Image (spheres, rainbow, N blue to C red):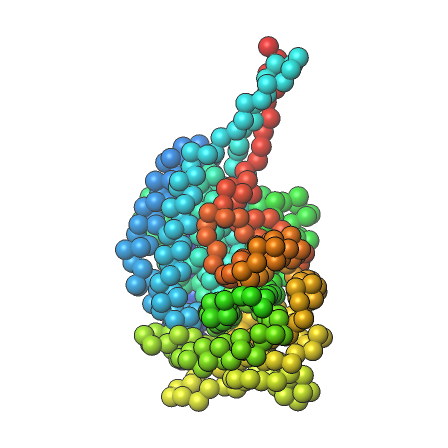
Length: 476
């Protein structure tokens, strides 16, 4: 599968390729070009050349292209989901939902096409002022491997509908679905050069994109350390930046919560996509008066999860996406066992089933008696490990939940409106759920605080990230 620059499938300038493997089997799926700095230059030039024409088209014309792309993606949902599962590892049902989510995001921004307008402002004693909303120009989107299709939609839909052109860099582990979706835009009528895809490592392709003087905005989703590097480089060119840098989301379970519902929410919130989600439940704080009952319910649900290849219809949790994450999870569990820094209630090892040794599988793991300085509570753990901490009350739960450098999401589970309000006001997070966790609709703004980044994706707010305001003063 080749990169896409200026509407054409192309090889890398250096001629090198790298392989994409199925994380469940280790099998080679496809080879893609190892992009170079020269490839980035070509892609940015193509986007720059296409900008004037695309920006001058009407928002309704642009919406027509996005709507057709969404329609084609839905028609090919099963094929796209199969490809996504092959390269990412998630179960097919999750992959299908992600493709549906991608299409829904496109359709949502089609509906906002008519909102791309400025304001009329009377200025007493000095006539009137008008504001115009203008696209920024060439934008770069850097995509992670955990939700490649959905996050591609989050970035390119508001960018394209606003009249910008884009260069997309997929994650090196999961570029195939992004390349296929990009080709669908060409079928839908997107002019050549408006959307370009360059595959390759972040230290070459990503850095070249961020450094390019023609790129006016970067939207990056990934780890905080890389995000800080992006912000540093972008500052040199005064570029617009949106950073979604992950999190360590807390879930607070009060003593008046519906424990069945909360246990089901924690199960899905932690182990969906094998725990590889930015807004996954990564820390669980439970009132001690209900902790024993709640943990038993959660343990029973975990034991019912079926691990396996995501392509098997009965699989409810697939493998980790890559060896780095797999080794990291094993290291954390080994440390718990060696240093006696927690009690493993269930899980805690590589599973034993047919062909499990070929993939990056690890059992869903529940850990109690976790000390406050545990790495499970301090780091963003991308994997199927869930630490449980008991607390005496809400103040203690909120204090411990806020004791992190991250601030992406959080949830509070209670039937008491005052407790819910206190959680919403006091929890340091960009999005707070009440009696639910993880679900994010394209209609609502999404982003974090502290080291979880800045800027917002989704909702009308995302459009402002891709538009410049020009003010015109008129003397009458």
